Length: 101
Image (cartoon, rainbow, N blue to C red; front, side, top):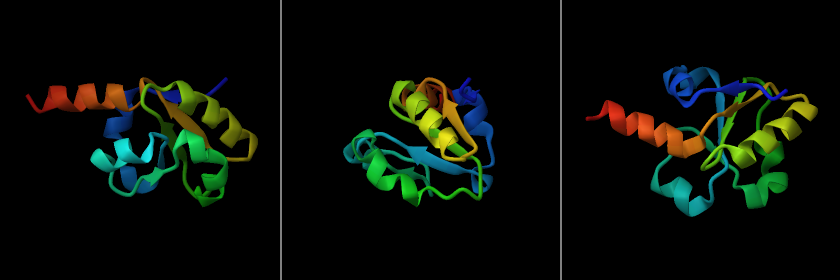
């Protein structure tokens, strides 16, 4: 079973204690991202997997949460403490915009 976290709980995490992997394509990432996050698009995941440090828990999201769930499985198989962010960046954005109103 894949470890998962709600977008709300993810927003509240101390980002200095985790590694964030944003799997959206580069154009999406550069338009809006979390400071310090790693951009490893789905299309380049295997080329970028070695850039993910193992010294902190890894939280992974894509646009909707589908691809990131698959990547969490692959990361766990390689010894990472990985968690999928449910709903992906879309859900994170909805929650963040709701707080700004």
